[in-house]
Amino acid sequence: MTESELADSITDDEARQLMKTYRRDALPASAIARAIAYAIEQPADVDVNELVVRPTAQLA
Image 1 (cartoon, rainbow, N blue to C red):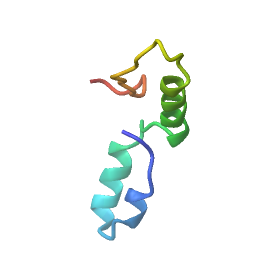
Image 2: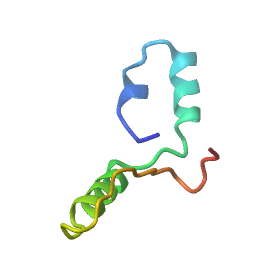
Image 3: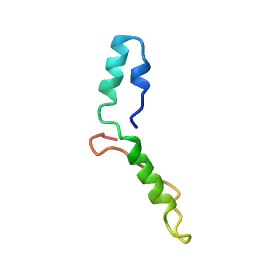
Image 4: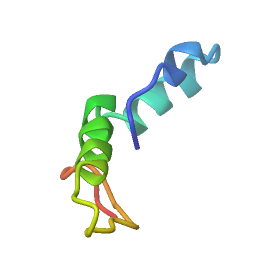
């Protein structure tokens, strides 16, 4: 999961707190950007066709 402003826009207080707790280990958008940069920076003879990105604190 990736950080976003979603939890800030939830009007129900209990649901907003649950979402913030659920997303406490979320990756920053910059981590996703680095993963995408890695994939597209590979040479033409390298095909990155699948990429799994998750925070190390989050269990699968």
